[in-house]
Length: 462
Length: 117
Image (cartoon, rainbow over all chains, first blue to last red; front, top):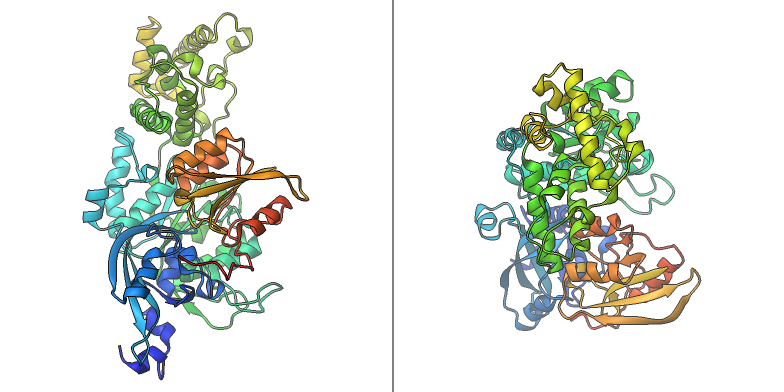
């Protein structure tokens, strides 16, 4: 690197750094951040202007040693180092990184700081095969036919660059699917930025998405790049898109069409190359019909559509996930629980799970915490599982709701016994309603056919 | 309010899972009551920290970077998590006690005299 490059004579250092296909940070001799490029802004979720003068490792948040021990070592020895590690960004994602830390020297060969290059290697096949996804929260599990269909669709969706709309009830794993598609796409080494469109008021959401110019409104004391700019070359994941206010939908549509937008208060258009994945638990078609969602935006987002089935429709997955999460919590809590009793597994597999996988995981954690035996018994299960009227089924799928039983108000004896009686009653009622057609009865009850078959045997109804 | 802060030297530890030490304090909305306790982690671990937070009936956690799964776990346990906080932990404690600290805060007075290593 020659002197003029270092001092920036005739060059705009920021432009040079932005040209790097990896995250780059420049730290001074006190290890405070001097600047970082746009790629690193996307990786960390911080903007360069907001973080100038702060300890670099407070922003990068690596596992290379608290307060940058490795950084200090490079400053002292002057020898560059290449290391693998990880960072946790502002979006609470852990990203596997290859760090290259080199000294930065002036024209007298004195070390005046560090240049830190962060390469996101989490999507490299070698990393996936050696480390897998050590963070089990990124795992997408399922053996059911419906999930196999999802798994088959994912690589196809990763191969294209079209917008994707992911629908599904709460807790079905929309976020994980979006991230997995991003990681395996050609944009996988670029930022994945998630923003919840339902969590912020309209004005704030606009500024978060598109950024603002200094002085655009009270409190806008400096320029802010916005999530679209931070996600440059990567993917922006707009979750709860159904909650996006109508005026912002117009702006989003224009970004989808023209790949450019005006930041809030700005008069210069910003060009972006970002893939959009949107998700919602609502039925966007219904929202369009009710005038809450723009039809043109719906079609623009719905180029590729993936629907994630609720857990109650994933035949066999409930048992599989129960075992998986029990293993996880047993290990975490250092207990020696080696399974469920037949009665408790029966209750757990017949429950409706309106909160889907998130709820199932929480139930297993509850049981694992409570259980002092070697098996999870019915007395370790949350009490609400014994009352079929308690947990509401999401409005999106009322058809599969377990019909409330009148028997629930006449409970006597043990809750387990009552539940079995209620369940038997429900099955009989469902079968009568559909004139004995088992497929239709299974659908009516929100179960798969095999679950119904098992239940019929259990209650001697077969 | 029972507050737990993950700390390193004078600052909020940059990562929840790597925090070497935590401070536990009671705050009545005006000031810290009783003597705060510090606990040195036998080994930094997000899971052990989560267990400690539950065991101690903490109501507010102040930390730096935290993984989504640990964050969601604590929120599910109805704990107020103020994450991505950068700066001096005592300032963070007093601001949180008065309800004036938000997630993502970069506190103005960073400890200049602190040895960065």
